[in-house]
Image 1 (cartoon, helix red, strand yellow):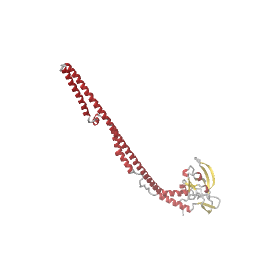
Image 2: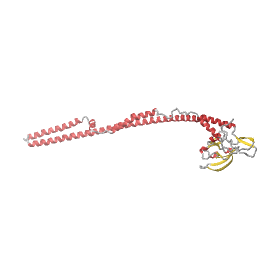
Image 3: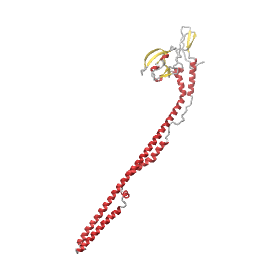
Image 4: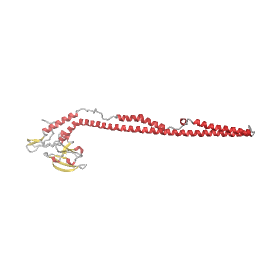
Length: 341
């Protein structure tokens, strides 16, 4: 069976009557070709969009909390502001003035009037007794008495009405304080209820969102399963020491000088077996910029010299293969895995 990955070679003539050609084993060719076909199949799969829901919607509890805020809390806050802005105007005073105030004022003024009339009659009696009724002195006294009457009327009326106004203002302030307290209590209760309902709804939505995220991760893993399987096989193939397999024929001795196969070039930059148990002729030749030791070595059963690292010294890039040996993901370190000679 031929291989589409058969490496190109350069034959160098030597004195011996013998030719050695290195080839990839048939079983390895089959794995390579099967992996390539599977990779091609994976690459031809059409894009599949996720049809499920990814973002949880507002829960009924959260919607209820929003309705309480918009339909009850905001109007209640406006009512509270309107109560606080009320002032004791003359029009407002009429609502709080004692409805019996006019009767009280009129009664007090009646007393003043009766007292005035009594003083008038007494003055007349005195003038008649003195034979001066209708005289100038009587007129003066009546004028003084009339002025005193008017003063008393104004004083009594003013004091009573001022007292009524002050009493009404006090009742207004008490009523406003009661209304403000009731509105504030109701507003606090509504706010607390809305907050509690909203928090309960948010918790429920968080649980739903976690379930949606998990479903999406499952979908992504399912879509990438085939590609990941191909990647793992490629990683295993990249570290296999197959350089020394070959056959002998009579003729001139020849040596393979060409580079790796196209498949080897594809997978060489991914992962490679770097378990110290698989290696011979290990030599430290330097360090990478990040301080990782760089070695040259050969694989057991293979004379080709490679450059790379020891897997146990780079645990953050080491991968345990199913075979029980360690591989290294060279994309995670600043050391290149390559053949030297």
